[in-house]
Amino acid sequence: MEISKTYWFVFYRDMLLIEKEKDACHVPFSENPPTVVPAGSKIHTIGSWNEHECKTYALLSPIEGNAIPNCFMEGLRSSFNMLPFEEYHWAGKASQILNWDANTKFCPRCGELTYQISPIGKKCPICRQEFYPIISPAIIVRITRGDDEVLLVHARNFKRDFFGLVAGFVEAGESLEECVYREVMEETQLKIKNLKYFGSQTWPYPSGIMIGYTAEYESGELKLQDEELSKGGWFKRDALPPIPEKLSLARKLIDDWLEN
Image 1 (spheres, helix red, strand yellow):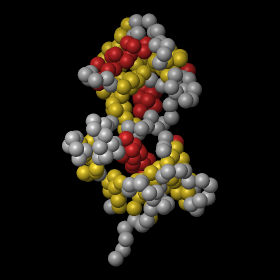
Image 2 (cartoon, one colour):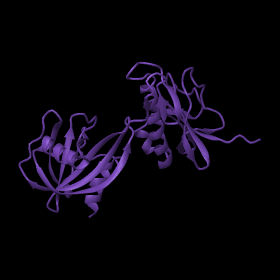
Image 3 (tube, helix red, strand yellow):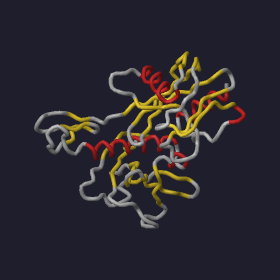
Image 4 (cartoon, helix red, strand yellow):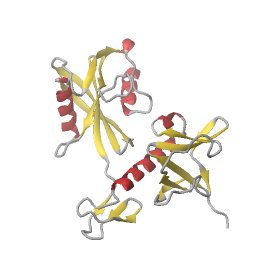
């Protein structure tokens, strides 16, 4: 009987195990796990792709040097530039499942050890509550002024010196659109108009989804929220500062503006 191969998404924290063959990088694709599965680390089946199962598990320590021939560990975000897109997409899902598993070992209401009832479901044996992966929605909005200016900002939590778009998490009790208007006013003191949905993107850092919008400047003087933004302003098409990488929805929104 032939044993089917599996796509293995192996993580240590946010570091993904990647295999390099010649000039191409992939996640390990084999019959058995590419490493010893640590005691207490559960193998999760996260779906099926190309008629093969996709599985994930967590390591207790990173793979060092040449411990596994032709393999190395890379941050999930930077793996976007190495892996085929579909593999990166599955890696993002795997990362979110592992994060959910680590954060739901015990019931938050009574402290009892939970047990798994489905690939994405757990249950408390005492208070009978069920737990599923929680995805945190955030909005991001491209604001233009006229035909040749876009608002770009640098958030204080950015690790690199690039400029992005106004963004923020949706709060309890508000719609996505209400969140856009609130975040824009809080962070810039500007009023916007012609708000339109653009698209969405899973954002597994660790468990989010970005919902993108476009809008136009209506009125107000730009005043940045000091505790959130370190710099920002209106930029013309031919004089943009460093902008986010192709990975992000922010870049897709900016590129869409540049191309139209």
